Length: 288
Image (cartoon, rainbow, N blue to C red; front, side):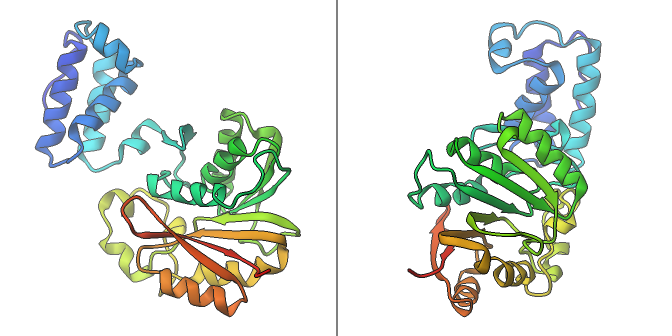
């Protein structure tokens, strides 16, 4: 790893960091280096541009060197800095939560596309809430809505609660331990979920950034990847209010399976694709 000392300038530190990460085969080396430099030094992109010649200092050099060693070893940037952006909001992370991914924003888009009144008093439930990113994002878009996030992990629930406070919706968000919707009482207007949907046998072949750093509980969807969907679809339909909706994120190859499951439970279903054109969300409802 290229040495970064207390006397190294901020701009030189960023360049050396990018070179070091690129040498380890990291495709996003330049972006990762910028994020890690800003985090290690406690500066913004504007600070780097206007005061790039300032030295990083001893503490900054030590923090940045430690961050770069972790990134070179395969740890994701989001895990290193302990937070990530989703829907324009910042979410803290913990070992029990997934890193919010851009593809999951498709689920927020699909919920907003339902055409519900922006200022309606919607009742929203997020199953397997994790970091709380889905619930918090929807509550920021629906300012009169109230929501409940359920998760089996108490660590995830603490993280989600902190994120609701961080993003100003804690007065309208509650969190509780639960196994999907088993203990939930209706009626509910919108249920969202990004459940584990990777087949158990596939997990060992995932990239190290996912396999070694994301919680297995949030990845493992059982032998065929559909265990969570079966549980959710067995529990949620009776809880939906008239005109209510269930929206779930899916894997790229699960569209047909989810459409079959939806039909088996008497639900109409529409598929929304992500920016890459892959099926990403199945929106379900009781037919009118």
